[in-house]
Length: 330
Length: 281
Image (cartoon, rainbow over all chains, first blue to last red; front, side):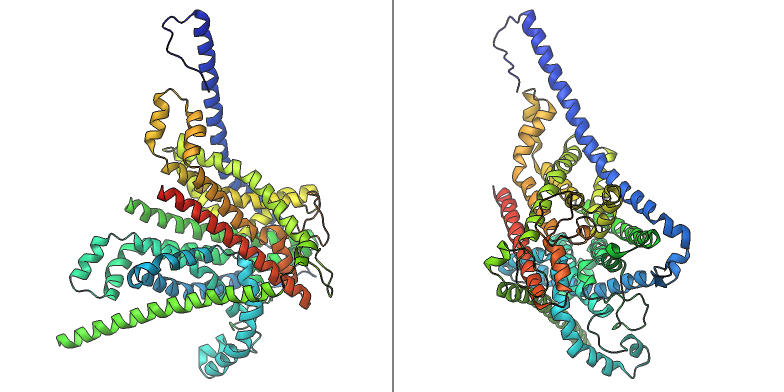
């Protein structure tokens, strides 16, 4: 720190020079610190650019060899070195779809409970519990899925599904085949459980942002809780809810460990949800260290690139929408 | 006619309310069940040997010592690399460039990095570190984790510095303090507990990350503190052991999962308490 004394009225020439030096030093320090922080901020941008470039370069051999066929074919044969990404892409989309179909209604209903129905003293504990659960690493969900959920589904749920929908045209294909326990449906369920805390806590935050006056006015007109939710809260928070859902979707699409345990890793598109499949992230996790040959490795990196591009788009939309609602709240 | 409208409205309200209660019940029960099974299976395998012995070959008893040490080493290095970068970037966004275009771009990109798939980070580090070095290594794993730490720290640092009242900054400026000193001695001090919260959350976030380590640090069945060699870590060991057909390995996987979950929960609770005291004061 500088010792700046204004006490002495007569400041000698030497003192003045010293002070000028000290001030110069401070100014220089400020310029340097500014430059350092600015470069750190730019580094964050470069990080994303670096990921993009590294993946593109790594994926180039595969993309050059297979061209557009890479995303439209489903053969995946390491022996003959023919690779197509359709099965993992399909698996990623379907498992995420199952997860969102389950997690979104559940998340919204729980958020409705927390903001409208729950007694005051219970709100904080439940809210905190859900936020803590959102922080549990995905490998924990994966190991639970493998040892608890998959056997349970195999023994009880899947046989029931198969026999119940066996005679109905479309559903019989969706729920066909032997009950393996592991497969697309199981992976989707695990993802749903994993994404649920996210969707819930974001929806709750968004619902909380509704000005109480609006809700009170509606209640004052005699609206029921459901009508307030349906006609006041949801329309007001629509953008934010969609943002939160997209954020959850981004998580589900890119999730690796929770899925890898229970997906079955089969490079095959099957009409049945009970059949084993694979996702982009599970394929990379399972095969990358064992991949021999440049083309195999490159194909896996190309899968990573596709995943990155898909999640980037989804997350960008999510952030844009959440930003819009934040701006409205002020 | 009025009566029938009322009845219909009442019916829809009751249905929605019941659905809401049921969803909360089922959701919380499902999540609670995961924790109960985890604690049950994990605690039954917990013993001193877990912390004193190495990961065993299949069919014999052992512990998780090398995995725990590897995880701690990589986490510490990742935090040591990621925190300064993240804090500096967050400082720029909140202090120097609060109204710059660069800040809003960085904020947008950072939010995307925050939830980008971690396996892609693993591929990235594989391309830029493992391939040039020619082998898997603990340091590559640590850098991969650092890439995940940075966005978390950027976000909390920025948020926390934004909460520092401007009057403090103006007071510092009025006694002639240059900006860099003001930031380091006043703003950082005022935002300290919040920034520490962010770092703790970052530790919690990476302590369970598996995907970025799979092809950077790989795994090592033996004790190794050599950062230039493949290094074992808890999540990767859990992954490998859980998918194995051996009962001992599966048991150790549960125990490892319990250790991770407890550390993550403790970290998040401490972080929350720190943030709470800040708000209260």
